[in-house]
Amino acid sequence: MKNLILLAVQGAGKGTLAKALCKKYGYVHISTGDILRQRASVDDELGTQIKNLIDKGILVPDDLILKTIEDKIQESECRNGYILDGFPRNLEQAKKYDEMIKRLNLDEGIVIHLTLPEDLLLKRITGRRICSSCGLIYNIYSDQMNSKQDGICDECGSSLYQRADDNEESMKNRIDTYFKVTVPIIDYYKNKGILYEVDSTDSNNALISVESILGFLGDHID
Ligand code: AMP
Image (cartoon, rainbow, N blue to C red; front, side, top):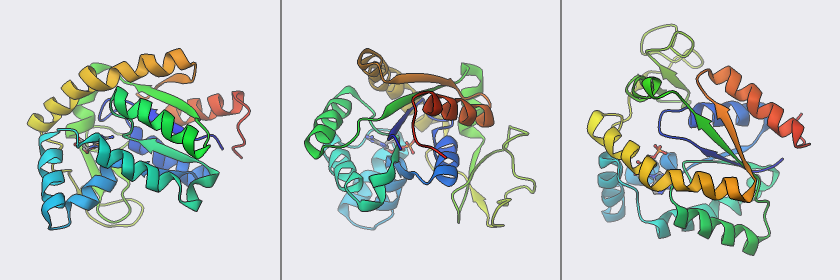
């Protein structure tokens, strides 16, 4: 399977789409946000530094992220295909990632750019709730994505929580950063001819669109 890079502003549904694709086709989900949150929960100097940045919605240093990605994509479970969710976040990371996959002789894959009407964005972020056990993502403002019972995961019955950085201050920083430093990556991948746009207003339709793109490209998803 082709490796996928999911690009989108926060709240556009990268995590939801990645989880659906992984469940159906067996990709490995590499979410830099999840990896960093896990590292931030360790009570040491690096953990505290990472936590401070994440809570304010500021990007962590490129070197740390690049090293994390390089280690992860070389793991044997990634050989059948992986999905990058939250990386690259700026042009420097995108260029360094290109060098890395060339050096490691890995597939460059394709980039899916998820788009979402602006008025939906705020609700997607402030309404997001996550299962504390299986990580499924819900949204309290969406009939399609809300849990059947308030605060309880439909799949495993565990409680749902809200991310600490899903608050207005951090969100403003994250959205500003996205438009200033992440959006230039879209043109970078467009110029390479590997970028595909997918509307993520409806998460089921987004999944179907990605499947059609992969089918069209002759990728071996089955
Ligand atoms: P996310 O879960 O993707 O929204 O990421 C949460 C936070 O983790 C971001 O606001 C950043 O502080 C940090 N982060 C995630 N991915 C990256 C990355 N590729 N480069 C730098 N910081 C990142």
